[in-house]
Image (cartoon, rainbow, N blue to C red; front, side, top):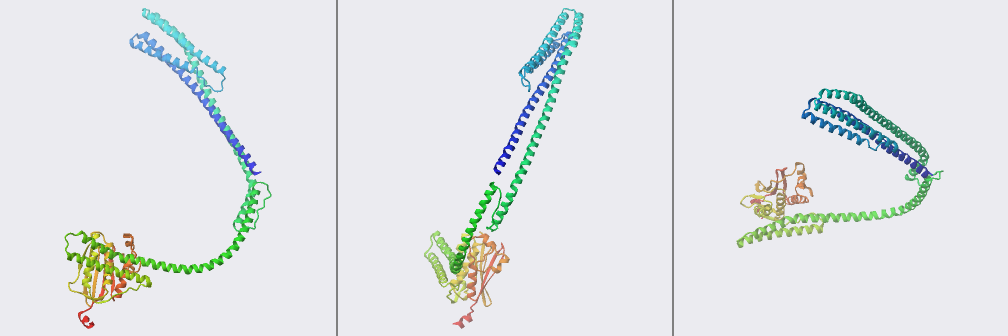
Length: 536
């Protein structure tokens, strides 16, 4: 079966990898041993060369001592003797190093004995030469200078030139040959290790290619059949069946795919029958849900507009009432007349607030946007403007904004609803306070132009972008900079102000510069004195 073939290939591949690892590990150990042998050989070569240098240096110092006999020459002899015996000691220590690869104990012991014997020979020879130098020194001290020179010349030629020099040269040449041989063996072993690794890698690669090719050839056809079958089943052809003549895992997988396709086909038939029944019920319910959804949407829109109107229209009178009360309570030593004036303004604002509540309840019950008006044919606009400015001046003080009024001293008569016009002024004043910066100023102006009366409210606030001026009186529209400046707001005030002015036969307009302030101007028909008498 396929799993056994795959397991065989894995085991053999692992064996190749393990063999290659062991071979590389053994080769690295052998290379390390040969490197050690080469290092030992070169170290001994360096010691013999040092011994030669120290020996001739000592011989020269002894000869200089015999010729000069100064204290400095004596100190030089002692120093050179210490260097010579230190070199002998280094040779003796390296002679007992036991780290030579591929050498049995008997051969290692023989090599150590031979090396120690050579070192002992050098040590004895140097002791003998030292003894001969002492004899020459005694002859010189006895005054036999010529005899001392003759003896020194003879033993220098016979002992140093004819015996010591060949001995040290042989030792140096022998160690140089050992070092060269160790280096050559190291290079040969590295070359052998390289070929071993190459051959093992090539063998593993060839086996992997052959086994991979055989496995691929064995699984290619079953995989193609399975892929085709899964593609057909995934495309919705549940009647397709996978056919494999083998008896391995692929055939087992193919039979399970066929069983799955059969079960899916049965379930699909049941789902198709249930879908027909469900679609019929969905059509019946959809119409009913659509009707209910329209009713709910209408109710929800009505509720949201009602709540928005309440929050917008009730906020300004409540703020002014609270401000009037707080200002009065903070004052000291006020007389009864001042308290009476404040209470009258609060009562007047409460009546305004009650009118808003009645209007909103009326709108909620009748589901219409028509406002109710109570007309007064002789309404003093100057008095109304003066009292209203005093009211929303309380809101301005909370934001450190000053308010000024420029109006004629005499009455200006118009026909209108006092509470509605006050509502208009509250809307404009509240917007001016909200969108002005602290320290700003609001100017309210009233003037007469032929048969019309105009009053305007100018602020130093954020202004309105030019592209938004045409839509500023649309319901629920707010300019982009107003949304950035304040999150609250529903865009209901200015549309209501326009409706109030339209009901009075007047108009409202705005001029504005972005970041430079806005000016809202309302115009109403003026009641002339002659017209007033005629009406009466």
